[in-house]
Length: 155
Image (cartoon, rainbow, N blue to C red; front, side, top):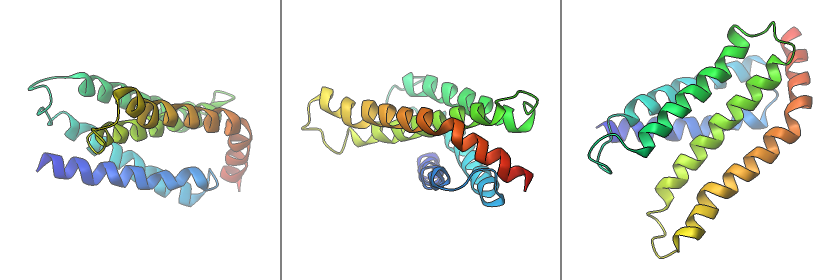
């Protein structure tokens, strides 16, 4: 049952990634953002109930802790860190990497879909490419997107 709940909320969080294609700082942004955060929290909590790979605490559990921290830092800026001049950029940066981490975690499950591929290829396709592509999008657009978001909040 834990795996089913974990999967449902993981997929929900992935689908909430549509937020990255929408204007920031709007009411829709907040609603989808709350859905993403809620889905991620449930996904991460349930990840600690999955022990079938290591029969105990494993590397994915450690990465879940990192993901919790990334999400918490991302949420800090719009909730309590607005006094910082570039709070919107920092929120976008940390939330972007929260999503990139989720995509990479989903990629981990894809390793089983193509077992005939060599490990280096699976690592490149499911981990390296999402990280590099996500990093480029996050860093390239963060300043302009953050400015627009702050303007949208004021409207």
